[in-house]
Image (cartoon, rainbow, N blue to C red; front, side, top):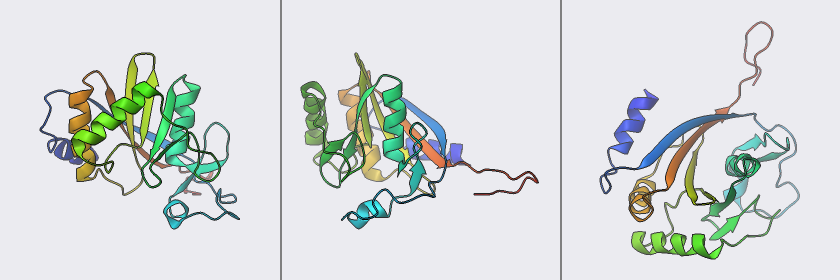
Length: 184
């Protein structure tokens, strides 16, 4: 059913003929330790996001930052496009400072935003490695692509025909007990 739903949503994108769009699935372990935001003044926007275990440093984080870690390990430069605070991040808000995009990527970002007419819908992660450009949208359990994200995809693929677009659908890794029942 998920494949059919994905194809239905993709058919809404009609402003381009060919786009390098991929869908991958990641499993993260559910974070059960101390919340990353405990003891800090953090807006509910962040405290309501599901927490996952970063697969590299085994600390609590959000999926977008865990995906950044995986990309960085593979040699990608990348930023989380934090539309809530209108900044670009390499880590969790409050714990890390915003990190501006390099000039080339900032000009591209601004060009897309200008054509779309707003930041809303810009995908979660912008990554680059040499001449390769990658846009990633993170979708957790029960999350779907919004109309603004499909509009943004159409504009970005038109302005960046060689870029790749990836929808990362993530879920929680379910640990099994010895008798086969789920632990988490």
